[in-house]
Image: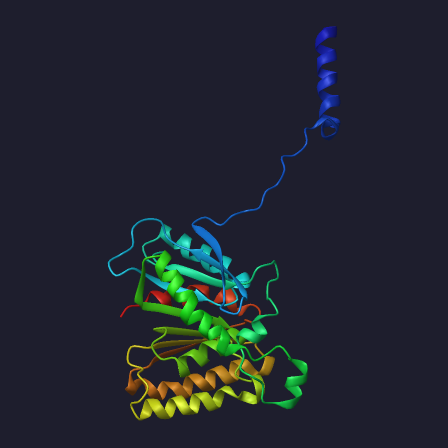
Length: 290
């Protein structure tokens, strides 16, 4: 080949071999932001800060407003719920036509230590008192949720006051059951995933018994209330799967008083894998009407 062409060919070969040495610097990376989401902070009356994470559909709200799903442990759960809601817009299920509100905490921890206080009552079992000194702030968190967060959300977004759902997992699931038993009407649908019924020597059972008595006497309104219980087949922590299934059997008897309850046992799932596997079922439960 002519000398000039040979020089060009050799240069190309050498350049290919030594390419990385001459490559430009990669563009700086930036944080990924979930589409159709926004975040803002809200403090409780005693100054405890919460990070509020919101996923909302584009477009106008339906008549009466959007259904709304409140998700506890927002740092850990929100992203899965937000993207699952958004992707449903590619189909015709209508599951994207709701607002998801994750209740989280400032900072990057997946499970913030403050959840121990927020989701539990004062401990009665002596050995647990020593282990979990921060537990017992449930009443304060309940006040924040019902009297501060919900009104703030309803001022910002067009939500349907009759189509509101609360989702909690583990200790969050225990808190969700507490809301069912003690605050009827606060949420139309309660989703308790892997509820820690074992906590504090099963102290939640006393609340259940008192609530069942009121329901059977007609003193606790349940008509139209929905409950979805979820557990993983392989959950061994505190016999969670067994406790959840037993609760489902007990509450099935209340269908005559208008409680609509369902039990979902997820095959092969463990305590930490239940939340993401439960997302679609939770969205369906939140969207169900009437």
